Amino acid sequence: MAEVRAEMVANVWKIVASEGDSISEGDTLVILESMKMEIPVLAEDSGVLTQLKVAEGDVIQEGDLIAVIE
Image (cartoon, rainbow, N blue to C red; front, side):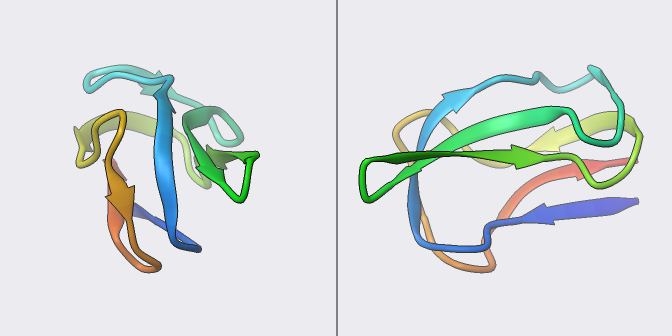
């Protein structure tokens, strides 16, 4: 099981993956926006996206859980 956590304070600009999707290492899960920059959040492991803990428009803090891949 791999937890994907936020590395910075940002807005969730776009959700790319959905719960139940098969994910490969390096796939984009969500795109964050911070200081007018788009920052893709990439999967660090392969597996199935079992939990997506954010929604478009959410403001997340450093360390917040974004997704769980099993």
